[in-house]
Image (cartoon, rainbow, N blue to C red; front, side, top):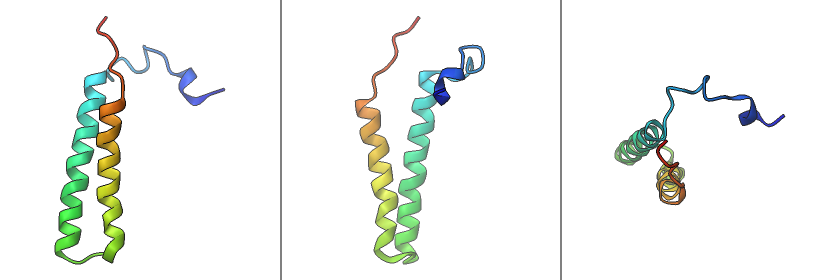
Length: 71
């Protein structure tokens, strides 16, 4: 069984597309701030750029993800 097949509208009724959008944007801002802080304190050297790469990946997902039509 695929994991997402067992979820129904009743179990996820409070999760909307707008909620997912907000969560992704909050994650992007948190990652960008974490990247700036890590740069300021010189944490993890060049590996800290992976934080920014994840934030960019989330933004690309936001651009490519299709919105579900309103019911």
